[in-house]
Amino acid sequence: MKYTSSTTEVPDAPAVPRHVAIIMDGNGRWATKRFLPRVAGHVKGVEAVRTVVESCARRGVEYLTLFAFSSENWRRPEEEVSLLMRLFVTALEREVSKLHANNIRLRVVGDLSRADEKLQGMIAAAERKTAANTRMTLTVCFNYGGRWDVMQAVGQMVKAHPGATDFTEEQLAPHLAMAYAPEPDLFIRTGGEQRISNFLLWQLAYTELFFTDTYWPDFSAECLDEAIASYQHRERRFGRTGAQLAEKTS
Ligand code: IPE
Ligand code: IPE
Ligand code: MG
Image (tube, rainbow, N blue to C red; front, side, top):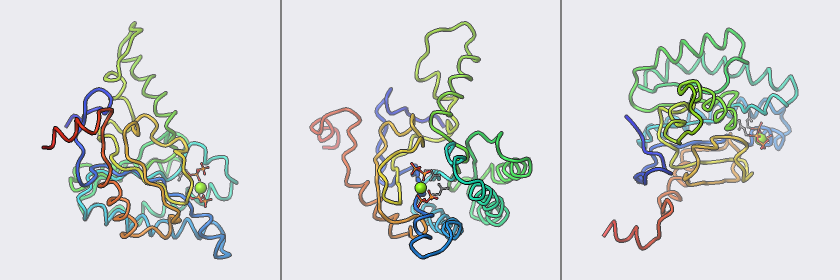
């Protein structure tokens, strides 16, 4: 299926967001508030992932994208980075069969060359196993950065059009890491910060943004419903006037 680009055509605005993208932030602060090590927050965060995957699938969301590790998170203390890597391996070991049983397709996007061989192998196996599943696509962004994505896409695009010097958005878009998905309808960031932190820079052009102070480990089905309800009250104009929209729907 080919999806509409929000800048070259006016896309539809589904009542239930077709694609939800989440920056899962606040694990460390959740733990610190409880006098626990930051790692306890990351462990608890995996539980929240399970809840949100299930809730999104139930609500008919077709694509759920989760920011798990950014290209800048390598700047953290070595101990925390290695723990996050181990946690990712454990989560894959434990969760992939459940995802498969629930007809959920798993994709992992980002610069995977920095993941160790074991992890790369596990990711490839998990993607292969769940490739034909149709209920929902869960994308985990790992060592992902919006700028990395645009740059790798530019590189591929240039190679695909030898000698060309002028390019269009339509030529770039198929090379983005998540070209298989429509642009996100709803973006959620937990943990109180109101920034994009180098997440999906290109794809968020017309996404509705929702920020909540809730720390990621506390994110529940109710929090998801609150975000979806907020989304449903937005007027998605894609550059047009409100009057034009009213005319279309009357
Ligand atoms: C998000 O929580 C998880 C990752 C970035 C891997 P944080 O670890 O950033 O938690 P805070 O923002 O320090 O509370
Ligand atoms: C964004 O959170 C990345 C992930 C949730 C994976 P950060 O905690 O790294 O973002 P900043 O540093 O507060 O912008
Ligand atoms: Mg953070």
